[in-house]
Image (tube, rainbow, N blue to C red; front, side, top):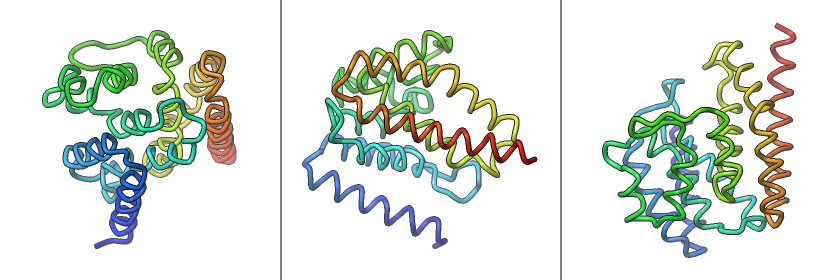
Length: 208
């Protein structure tokens, strides 16, 4: 077992224990479902695919005191790619039946394309900004993307990811912060994290 695989296995065990300790059984169900769906490795050829969902969820566990719906938010974080990547096995109706409308609606809002439907960027981020769950999961998802793309994506693609943060994420977070002020601490934390990551990427490629 490689060091990356060992670290992933340890983090998965910690997450299971954390969720069980809080009786977040719906999130535990989602964890095992997606773990089985996401086989293979990420684009680096080494990291397990499921490590992305696990990492996004781990980040959000640190913001639980600032969430309106902690377990639903963590469940959506685990499931956020299911409608895009596994629609054939898990369409929206199946997610609703298993996890409820609140979860499946948020996962749908986080899906840029699913079942032949493709959303424009403006519509996509507008929908996310009106959802207290999706508006937390999406910036956490982008934070992990930014953290792990060095050495995987070319500089031009990395800078495009940064530009999308500036064009869409910051305005979305501003809208969500006003709509859901009781989640203010989580939004501010995520905004600061994104800003630091984007500035670091920009600085690295200015030096190139």
